[in-house]
Amino acid sequence: MSDHKAQKIIFNKHPNTSKEYGGMIINDKDATNSTMIKEVMKSLAKKVMTLNVFDILNFSKPAKITSPMSLLQCCANELLRTDLLIKASNCEDPIERMKNVACFAISGVHQSPELCRSRAPFNPILGETYQATMKNGVSIYFEQTVHTPPTFNCLMYGPDKSFEYFSNGTIKANLDGLNTIRGWREGKSFLKFKDGSTLTLNNLKTRINGVMMGDRIYNYYGTLTIKDYKNKIECNIVLEDQANEGMLSKMIWGSKKCQYDEFKIEIKQVNPNTKEKELKAEGYGSWLGQIFFDDVQYWSIFEDNEFNWNQENLWILPSDSLKREDIIASIKEDYENAQIQKEKLEEMEKNDMKLRKK
Image (tube, rainbow, N blue to C red; front, side, top):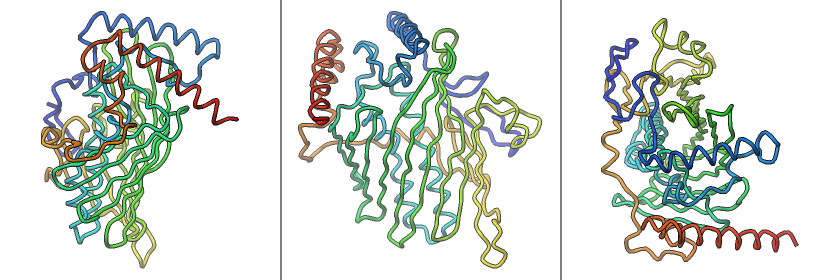
């Protein structure tokens, strides 16, 4: 529980929230895996220092310390709260619609650290796909279009095409010192509604502290901006970077420093007469708790378990993530076979890339 002094809001947060700094504690419960991760990080640090590796995603990880799912599945899980987009599609008030879109944008960011913890997911193979549906009629499709750096494209449709969501993302990460990893997704997402409104969304950045020592804490920072071009509305969600402690927190929260998972939301609209941006709504939240606008709760992390993707009654392509032999073996905890299958796929992909260059 965290007393939010600015609005006297008490956030009920995820049990793995760091009480000292905020963010999610993702320590690996398996001591052997934790030791392996540290050894891999030491090896990686040496390569970075000798300029052999710039992006740590290019570094092949042992299957045993890799989460038994593809990066495409992780990205899909960040989009689970499609009910918020369906609700947004039914809003006649564009400000109310923006509130729901803002909640959707934040609602899924806890999924990857919660599901994967210290283990990164399997890098998708070039041409890998993932498709799924929800009981509410939403369909989603992913394809890995570039291997290095990992780049995917995504399409998601609401029931009766009440909304269309499409995005592309290039995932990057690097070491920031020997105890911190920073990650980010280049690219934008686009959200289109039946009334012709098109919104754009960018992405927050990731910071993981405690890679080599101390609690391993996963957090986000930066500004997530959502723009509605038809209605001239802009929403900004600001999360402070722990490395810049005090710079934004004093401006946003006053003298009391917030935890780094907490944020403020401002929704502004251009006045057609003055051409100035006017504040239309203000919200507060935590990506590990809830989001409030005018003391009304719009989203809670504890409602997310009601939503999941499934592949029932779908014809699944052979290239689907769930058909990868290394992931299947990893789910069964057959890590020796998972490593063999992983290396086979990586070798096949290398040969494919050579053929594409001819």
